[in-house]
Image 1: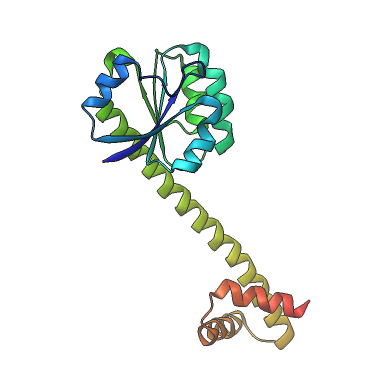
Image 2 (image 1 turned 90 degrees about the horizontal axis):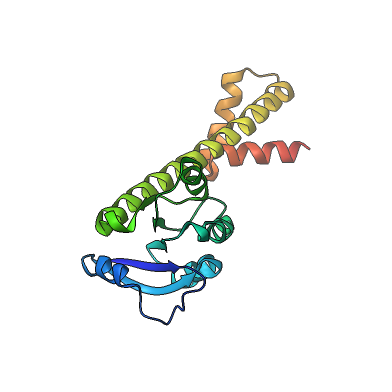
Length: 192
């Protein structure tokens, strides 16, 4: 069962009953609605409720600016999948929503909410995996720079070759049970 945070237009009272089309769409979905938010409270409510997905229901394009402003709080990295139900959008609006972290959208009249939520979840999971992989690669590249610097320092200080300097670093890392980058960083900092 998916936990949802529903986002409704700012002027709709969150305590009022949901629009009928949305109630019908939710009836056929294996989901629990944790709460409702307006665009301006979206990021805050998502932080408090920690839903698995955010479902934005903005049937009128007039609300897109408020949504755009709200989504900027996540810097294009939402903590969960974000899907949206709205009237048809133009290409520029689609690009803006993707850049802000919206994963899937559909029109209310052609709504298959289960498919929409599944599509958004799949895209969010893929993006999360790619972000993790990118961060890992950045860390490894940064560590490689430290290793190269420490290796050069050892080579000039001890008058040894590249392989021997790398062997010293690797041996120290294994002995201290640390990553090679951490040991290299320590060597550079100690030398300074």
